[in-house]
Image (cartoon, rainbow, N blue to C red; front, side, top):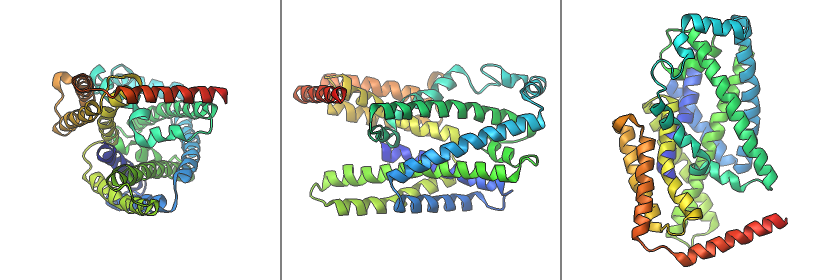
Length: 365
């Protein structure tokens, strides 16, 4: 599931860099050139670096992105609009529909559920994120990590919305939401150095994200797939194979990104909607003794096929998005097939006792 549905999510990161470079350079750097450059950077960084470097770049780019994006927002609001009061008065006067809920038509309740449902389970369903739950040295470190992620996401969401609304006023004829950020940063009253720093932060974020995906997928292929077929394979061979899988995955993602099948946000949700199909099996593994391997495997396959078909066909039965229907089909399939097949009760008891011992050990520490 990861090898299939994380490819579009990786492609989104490459697309973002291509669109940003094209917009800020005024077309001097074409989209495809930016896409290729981003792919080469991602391959190089994934080859020479590793998980520790991704963690450091994550921290650094998050700090750069947060500080510079807030500075740009304040610069636009106070330099162009004279403050938040003037900004909202301008919006009220020229675009009052953008200050109403659900807005001028796109954000219906069904669209909102379809977009947010995959993100709600993001840290469970996306392996490049869930693997980080194994990294913190203590529970307090994990709490800080999760709290920092929530705070950063909340602030950056507000900033992104304000950027979009500002660009709507400054460039009312703009077509395509993906062009909003480069258009805003290209405004003549934004200092070049500030726009450049923001671009570096966004570039670092995209490269860091795609490298997380590349490292995760390459290790999953080498450890879970190749090692499963050849248990006697050496760690050196596994590492070598993982390294050579990186450019292959990157190339597929680059081709996918070059097709520009839709807006970045929608493609990101499409990828997460596919990975959402793993959630019932993951919950079942921890909390439902009657869950079976057959139920887990077939629920992911059936849910993935349904989600993929609905995504690419554009069909939305009763107006609901693919994530909703795929999730429901996956959940029903997991429960139904598990009830029709024999659960491994011995393994369930063994696993639960293992968890209990682990919790006691952690509490003692």
